Length: 401
Image (cartoon, rainbow, N blue to C red; front, side):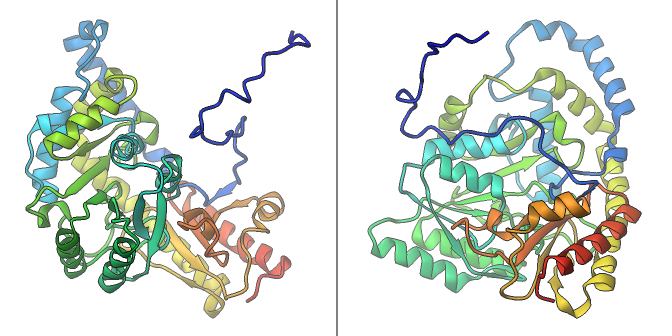
């Protein structure tokens, strides 16, 4: 039992300590469109167990050792081969660092590159997890205008020149070029080439977050930004989270040697979990391509269900993306709509969860009439029911239609 004279840490917190995080389980709706979870039924649990057992039979004794800080070497070799085949990225296993999902590799790079006040350029709406990490390191995050092909080159040049004119050359450009989170578009090849040229012209490196690239349902693959650069100015991050399971917590990065050595030095906790690495390596080696094909068929149906349901229930009163892959759509309600103030009530009354636009805005305020809707977790009939309930809830809340 706590005494009356409890020690007070309030005056001891570091100046750059993050704000308190809430405790307890996050309230989730029955119709959970808030988080980009993959399909729960598709998680290959039996195969992962069999893969893990085989690995433990062969290498289980090595769990007594602390693993290489860059991660399990056979899995890094697999990643290197996959990147060469799928993304035209030709690096060795020693150029790969495994991390806890893609979030830890991004955190490592930001930690060794970003000082408080550094200008960081992103899309006008971008993944909230990376924005949170950029804020954690005190970055001055500036959104750059996009269209359906990605970041606008003229806007990017203008943002860089503006920062340089302030005596604050940007530290990096962060991009999710394929099935962008939350907007859903895929950056065209011409746009990727233009962004690389701008990056090289001004000497501002690119961080390419390619964690959704395998989730393609339609259209043709577009090569990686990394493959278009010959100067070593592109940092590449990927993940197994969306193609096997987020709970496995395995991702990776590849960057030039000098930066890699600094990033590894900043890596907390040593190597990633060897137990999970064994399972993912053995499973991925023989099964991953087939599994990706299977889950993409599942998710294609879910995407189509959400697009269809939005058309039936919102019609011409809203706009939304129709991505070629990924796990989410970007919904735009009419100007003046406020999807922030009503979110909790919609969750409570309609049991529908979503994330409003400001969660993805570099300024934390723009886009109150936008919402990201994720289709990966719910089943198609639940998606149809949930979108109908969402439209009804919006009308009850007086959202402009």
